[in-house]
Image (cartoon, rainbow, N blue to C red; front, side, top):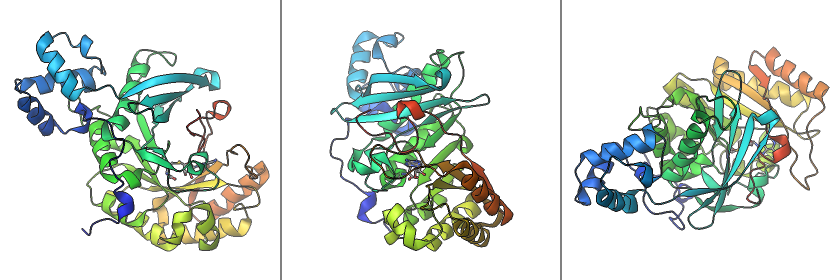
Length: 367
Ligand code: SAH
């Protein structure tokens, strides 16, 4: 495997101190041994954090106080503190604004549906991809999140569901990397986070890989690398238009990797994993909602992916000050009809969190 270009390797600036959730099971054992503690303390810590979903050393009373202090200061530094929670959709959607150790702000959104509960997680604070319709893209990248900062968003949400903070107690079942940031631009940490999220408890949080979605603007070398990781997570590609001319402006990284290359990489991913790829399409009035674009999208996807694509149309969620708006419903319906007519499955994504700026692309740091 060739090494990835620098864009995937942003500096460690601002990352928090090492945390239990940064480490694999073997690394946790080593770390505990280096502290002069008994190796089984690693399993105890993991059972508390991943199994009982607690990050608070004071609750880990089966570990003697002196050992607990040593272990906690080396492996459980405080990572994220909630600044506030905001709820909407009759209590079924909750956005949390978090403050990291260095004051960086980030957000995650918990969405309860009748058959599942999904957490939308951030992989970076801000985003460097500069898509003009996305609020996060306007502020630029502040920094990558550490593996543990990603995992801790999930741990906290799983605990909130268990404890009935979003209605009846329930189980967090699905994770989408569709919060702030470009997950494949923070590649290693995101992959490690997927392992921590999906490994069975007490090694990890025990969420099925098939219920995790990694969404990308289309960083082709990283998609190709992801295809070889042996994971079965779903890949979502934010396409937003089938033609390079418009995509160069809507998803600026398209000037580097063109639509056809992105779809070929998506095909490789589908072939390696046997999983259908989601194609994300934010429908923007008079910008990318034309019948000919629907036809071209259908044709391209049939050619590159056949039955291995599913298009999610997302009604544009206008960001403050933007001149763009969602397409009228009849235009949206016609768009979906044409993609389906080309033999490609296509549905409209349910939008959540509109009133609390928790909808797609609105996870900007002002919260
Ligand atoms: N960087 C990744 C993941 C974050 S965004 C990516 O781009 O895929 C998750 C999805 O929300 C992406 O498809 C993104 O294009 C879309 N999105 C961003 N802003 C939006 C907006 N204002 N309205 C609708 N969808 C938006």
